[in-house]
Image (cartoon, rainbow, N blue to C red; front, side):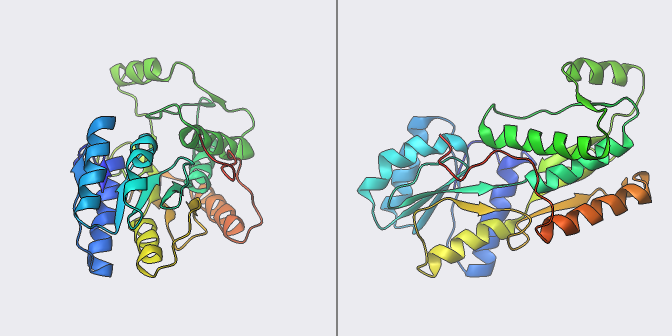
Length: 267
C-alpha cells in the first residue's frame, strides 16, 4: 500500500493502514506500506512492489492514478488499485468509498440540532469525491431544516467561538474522530476495514475485472455511521430516531441521497 501521509494522522492514512492490517489478519496476506508524497516517489514505489511480486498494490488517493498508469503496463500480473478516481485499464481499477449516505445522516443531525442555521464543511482537496460528500451533508441538513445554509466564513467563526468559550460540535469523516476531540465530535461517517478486505478478496479469488468498485452503506458494512460514546447523550432521542428511520430507508433503497454521479469515469 502506498500512502500520501503518515499512518499516525488518525484520519485518511490511518484508516487505510487499518484496512491493510485487516487484509493481513483475515486473508493471511503478506503486507507492506510506504509513505510516498510525490509522483516520482509514487511511481518508483509502485514499480518496486510489483518487482517484489506483490499481487495487489494499493495507491490510497486520487493522486495515485497517473503513477499507476505509468507502471501498470510493465506488470500485467499485478493489480493496481487507487482510492477514488476513474482510471481503468486491464490491471488498474479505482475503489470509490461512497460515504455520502452516512454524511447525509450527519447532515440530519446538524440540521436538527443547530441553533444558528449555519453549517460548515471542510475538505482536504477540491475533488469530486469530497464535493459529493459536501452535497450529501447539506442535503441531509436541508431535508429536516430547509433554513440551514453553508457558512462561508467557518474558520473565522470557529476561532471566535473558541475565544468566547463556546462549544462548536463537529463531525468526523472517513475515520472515527471521536478520540481526537471527545468533547466536540458528535458522530462520524466511517470507511471501515471491510472495504479494503472486500477488494482484496475479489483479487485473491480471481474475480477481478477492470471497473469502478463502489462501496457504500449498502455494501458489506463498508461504510457506517458511528456516534461518539461520550457525546451521544447530547443528541436528542428524537434526532437519533429520525436518523435511524432515514438509515433504514437508505438500506431498503427507499431514500436516495444527493451525490455526484460517478458511474462515468471520475477524471
